[in-house]
Length: 549
Length: 68
Image (cartoon, rainbow over all chains, first blue to last red; front, side, top):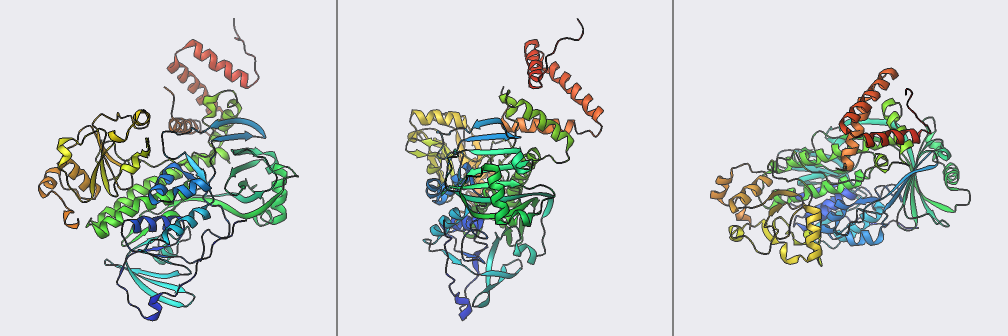
């Protein structure tokens, strides 16, 4: 069985009187979100300090936790250089089956996506993902990872934040320009600042996760969902394969079931055997009971403290939206913080983080609520009515079967309401990483903003464009016939159309244009940086950031 | 045109909201009205016949007109 790595505590120099200037960014919490953000920031040249109160990855042992990594998250990991390890270790599946009252209701094959660099998702225990992120960070000179370092207090004013950190060798203080709280659902930072999330739903619907290493099974590499399973007291069960022949089993508990009793080794073994047969040989790797909450902070930025991941919002795990949402928070915040710290962007740019990621959080909450209601409508008569009808008709009618909702896989949020995007310009979507011969669309992108031109030559109007945060990339020369077809299918654009799209550092599209002129690019860029001056004003001032080149 | 998954999910959401009536009689009436409204929108006898037959089959019913 996998053994969690242990990372040594190193006595911080502050305990010996060293005085350090204010750190640009301190991340509280070395979990999935914090580590992803740290890697993004350091790759963008921002010195980053990470404080984690534990000395390993994962939470409370070998908890699989987030274990289904969506395509958009894999694209983020690709940018951060860890995707290859995750997909190599992870498990791909593309068939999902749903049973109800022990009878098959429907199955569906998730579409293979040969046009795109990554498949729809990969299953891998969260502790592996975190380990790979830590190992990537260990070779980054700009990051300072401090284990067994617990934030006890946090005070902020308009200039910065002072943190009090408890360690095995004693407490010390350090100062930061910005703090990002990635310290989970029970965020200490949130509590210290007297902040609470808005709770949108809190249920008594409890589940027990039992991660098992199975020794003698030939279960297919598919996702199975049992609704109203007789062997589980008429409640739902999920089965997902992960790495190391480990399976994630989620059992919905009965309303009057004692969770403490259900979590005893004997009860868990009985439950697994009842569901999968008495001959199954397995070891329990981890177990835990959960009841879900849907909540989100009203503002994700409070002065110089920003909140990300579970510290900012919580969502039920239907559709694997928690972990994916945290990584995508980091993806959204990293470039904005880097531009504020290093390229003179206005701090107001960070307010767009709240707008964009709150929209994503609410989309996740909406989707998860729909799935959880389908799985277990509880007292909702109308939802039960339609659920029963759908399940009755699904075996015969494939179109009806499509409305079975046991969890819609996380898709990237389209930032429709973002103040950074021009209205009616078709922006906000994440740019799919379309394969182009032996490269891909994302590999053509620069570290900051990129105008991608669907053609073989840079249009004359853009040829003279110079900006330290911008590069122009030509798609045409990278395309073979397959790539041209893929672009048409995935983006609805011809490789030789001459269309020009402005793409943000987080690979979201800022605007799509048939033609683009330099002053428009600068205006769009300025808008994406939080500057609301007009195109003509910007064209005259030419460059609000050139001095930082 | 085939619905996207999101459109289907949104449609189911609207169905659940439409029939969210405490009174079963009201719920039945809303379902009947919905069937008629959808039939009016579809306006295709073959498709409608197919839909009715499909529901009957899923409920193990053999149906024939109750009046000649």
